Length: 359
Image (tube, rainbow, N blue to C red; front, side, top):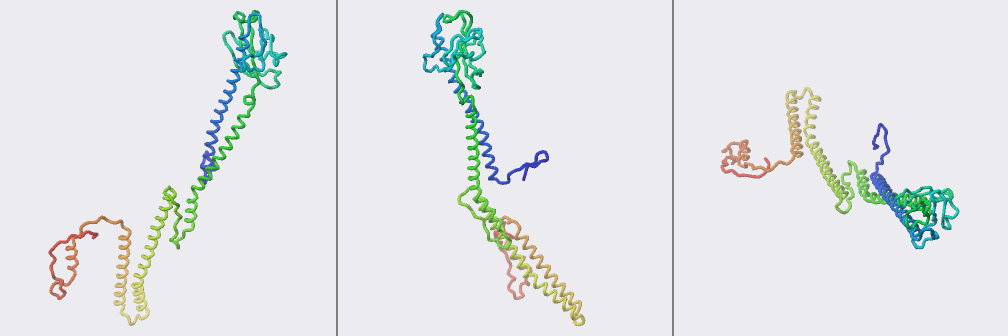
């Protein structure tokens, strides 16, 4: 069955196995995608933070060695101060000093930190970097600072390094995306297998129920071991089939009994009618009708008995209640010949006996 949306019928898998596999696969895809996005963001942030710390160390190392009128070589002394490009730029945008990798190149960035901003971290993509972007740290040196090497206006220190592939490319996204797809497919496949094995007894029950016919009521469904829901379903189905077989056999016995009981009065009635038709001159019509009426009464009595039997058989059992056995005996004796007729049934009943049972 397919759900409807705005008059359209959308495909809807009928198999429980397929539905569970799709749901689990979709859940894994959503959850792992969110986790992957958070993980990639964390990895990128960690890499950028570590590189920024290296740039900060390179800038601090260089500035700590500066003196008024003296600019030391831009070669960091600290091993952790790893910066590929180091430049000192004046307020006019001219490179005053640069290390070997940055020599002869324009400033790493045209961004100028404002007074009091401290170090600023940003990404720059200069024209000479051949399409590669740089992680840059910039620091403003004011001329009134005690260790300012130059007094002719503010200067700017730039430390930069090339972005690693983890930041500049989409390798992390591609790797995590492939891993998420593989994990989601694997989760759906595992769910497919597990649900299939779980529903295997249900398929066996369905196949066995499809073989059931009205002629063979001895068929029973296979009951798996254990006490789970499927095993309980199988046992309940077998119990229902037992009751069904018992009911059908009871109706068969009733039909056989009814046909046997009705055969004799129907045969007698037919014989009487045929005799009256075959010998109209020899059969007394009034007597024939009387005999026919007697046979009809007998037939009616049998039908009433059969109806009473079905009502009593199908009626729910009533609660036990006391039965006055003496009253029952008196009622029965009332229909017998009177005392003194030689039957020996004239003895009075004086005591009352209580009997548990149905009246």
